Image 1 (tube, rainbow, N blue to C red):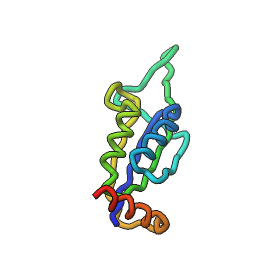
Image 2 (cartoon, rainbow, N blue to C red):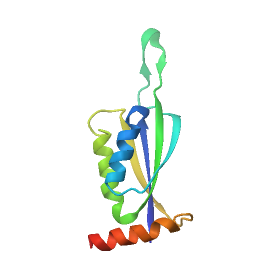
Image 3 (cartoon, rainbow, N blue to C red):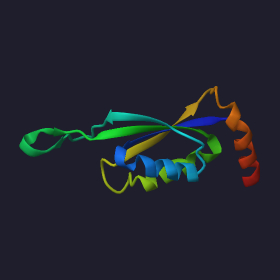
Length: 116
C-alpha cells in the first residue's frame, strides 16, 4: 500500500471544519501542529504600521494514495484557499515508507475494494 502526506497550513479557526471535511473525504486521522506562523508575499500591516501575524495550524494527513486527490481538493474547497489570499495552502508529498499504520491498512484495503 502506498501513502502520501498532505500538509495543510490554515488559520486556526478553520482547523475543525477542515478536519471534519478531510475525514468525510477519506482521511483516517491527522496530526495538528498549533501556533505556526505564516507570511505571504506582502507582510500585513495594521495600526501604526505594526506587522500582523496570524497564528496558523499545520495539519498533517497520512493518506492512502487513491484517496489523496479527493482529500486535497476537499480541504482546499472547505478552506477557501483559492477564493481569497492568505486563507491557507495545502500540498501533497510522496511517502517512501511508513510505520505505525498497520492497524489502518486492513480498513483501507476494505474501503478500496468496495470502491472498485
